[in-house]
Image (cartoon, rainbow, N blue to C red; front, side, top):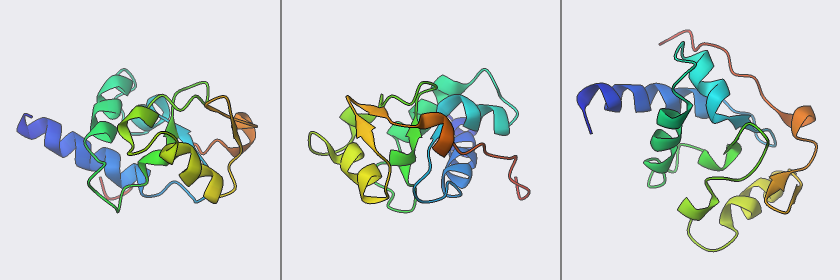
Length: 112
């Protein structure tokens, strides 16, 4: 990983830490909030690298359609879904139900 990637990842984690419990956001929304709208894939890489960090609620980040695309990076078969459901987020067929209603739009973090 390049040093600038590490800095980008930390900026992603700052946004993810602000996602309220029971809400979700997307890789693209995080990228847009960071001023790098075309870097949704890089946000995904950051999320993949975050699973050893308990302070980053990676389970709250889904794709632009509410699909749990990162679920295979969690231990166990359904851990991502279980974490979301424990916060009151309903998931059916690996997709967040009422996605538009519980979607959280991040803002550019002031400290970044």
